[in-house]
Amino acid sequence: MITHTHRPLRVVLYEGSGSIALPAESRAKVMMALLDQGYTVTRSGHGASAVPHDDRSLLVLGAFEGRAPALEDATGLVSIDTRDITGLAPDAIVALVSKSRGDKPMNEPGKWKPWFPVIDYSRCTNCMQCLSFCLFDVYGVSEDNKIQVQNNDNCKTNCPACSRVCPEVAIMFPKYQAGPINGDEINESESGREKIKVDISSLLGGDIYSALKDRSAAAKSRFSKERSPDKALDERKKCLTKLVGDGFIPADVLASLPSTEEILKKAEIAKAKAAAALAAQ
Amino acid sequence: MSSPATILYCRCAYAQVVPTGVKNDVLQQLCASEASFETVSDLCEMAAHRDPRLQAIAACSKLRIAACYPRAVKGLFQQAGFPLPAETEILNMRTQTAAEITESLLRSDS
Ligand code: SF4
Ligand code: SF4
Image 1 (spheres, rainbow over the protein chains, first blue to last red):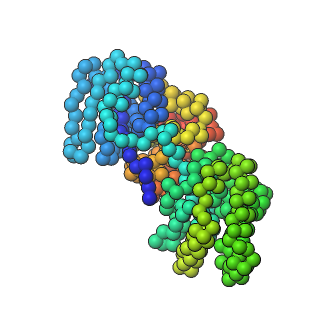
Image 2: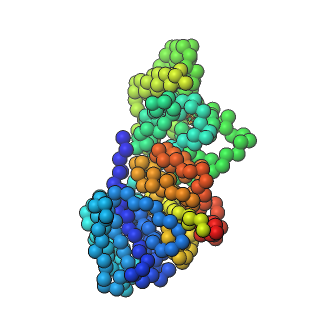
Image 3: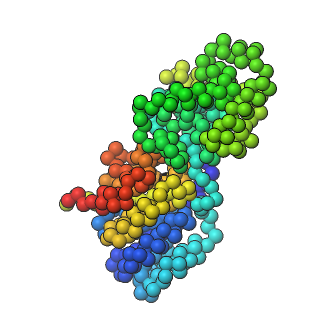
């Protein structure tokens, strides 16, 4: 499921013929304020190409000296509104845009954080470990049996744990602070990778992870015979608490973990999906 | 004469991981130039809901993008279903200076 789909108005700062150019400082102030509120802004000047338009409403701002032209889209698909901004201060221009937008819904910064894994397919080997690892169904398999991020809304904000389980360092979170999770180049000689993998296996209480990874009957029976679900859950919580304490994952991930039964069920489903995709390759 | 480049600036407004000084300077320098350019509030936000505007952007020739790490930006477009052309130039406001970035964005090829 994808939410937060309200696209913003496209605002065009028109400085071509028939309009006076704004002072550079005011132009920058207006653009910063509009972008920080979530709008998309095009500066229409000279010397570079504009991105073609889509089906959204267009708001054209220009210093037309009281003569804002009435414009109509030749295809009839897009509504175009023009506004004269002659002599207006940056704040007044931003207020004009808000008024013009009215109560049309729009995504706005500050109300939601776009946090989800992004796969670097130039590194990904389609091993499916991320699919097996994630307890919140973020990953899925495409029709052609490739790993895919399918439910990015399910991802726990600020939790980059799955990036550490990927043996190819192919999972990025662009809003993360540090590299290589933020997309920074990977130092192939990084020695911490093995250690990280051990952390993750303990994060899941050991047995669940190895059961998923090995996909062997032996691992499966060891899980069911040697550990009671309660014990596995206790152990997982202890390890998660440690990772929360280390500041690697946020506390609410711990609070929102599914029940042990659900985890086991999810693990089975993920394992079956991964096995089917791997077999079909 | 060759066709002009398309310049795109990402504001990273939904979670500011790009240093404010750099992103403000880049925008100010673009605004001080004569060039047309496109700005978006947050490419991650657009990729999260597969905004079709990413397709329009990816279809532009000679694209230059000021955002963050090239691997992340390419991944976002690809994951949204609109891979960037291989020759797209991605400037990284997390690691480069504003001067380096605007010089590359506004460079004339002719
Ligand atoms: S764990 Fe990494 S390499 Fe394996 S499928 Fe997931 S992204 Fe690809
Ligand atoms: S692409 Fe990079 S610069 Fe743009 S919003 Fe995402 S993290 Fe920020």
